[in-house]
Length: 316
Image 1 (cartoon, rainbow, N blue to C red):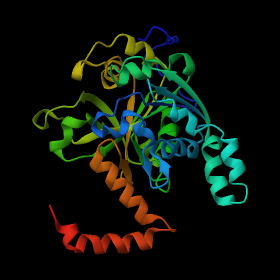
Image 2: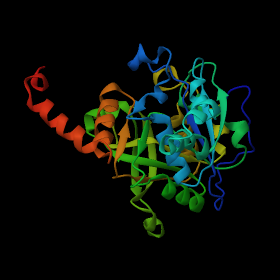
Image 3: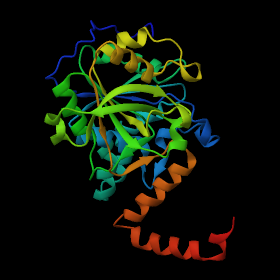
């Protein structure tokens, strides 16, 4: 447990009824896959057409009714906070361009943004542990800073409602090819209580393992970058040693609470998910969202089709 993180009074006994109103976005990583671009520009601010990845994530939180967002940052990443701050000088210049002015003002209107610095990047569990003081004894959402879902196919509202009912841990799953299990936390599951069916495809989680080899994976259900957690997770992180990759893994802390009786459920998400954590996924996200834009989609799709059909597009 980080020294400056709170240790709320915790128990593996869940308390249902309170809906999470805060979100934590761990965003302190070095993003080595995107170097040298991320030497100065945080990966979370790489643009997807004309909005950074991080804004899409905060918009997802705002849509779910969360207006309190804590960014876990690292050295050289203060620009993430600046993106959600006012720019009066720029706003003055855009006074006669109302559409651009609204776009510039939108980030600051989404949520209250708070920050906490993680001095060393020692795993997702280590990063989440720094949120203890800010979160206190409330349930909260964790949203990874390199993936988001379509606002027309929301995921987080149902997760928040499910956690408010069960009081335990709520995860999001997606089916992945078996050969990709080594990239994710993978779950073993059982059918959930039928009373939860109105919230979507809900399953009860019976086990979690971090990045197993395909031959060792209990299923192909991968943990996505969305979690709704009780405050008991902070004490569990403090009892969690180094795991996969020599880091303090959030999956291991959740597994500890699961073994101690904490209910863990998940929603299997079958909507549109964008993963910008690696260059290929980032490029796919840019192309897909550009194609869907009303203002430039038609022209871009035409150019893209012509490019792919051309000699240049067929080169390898």
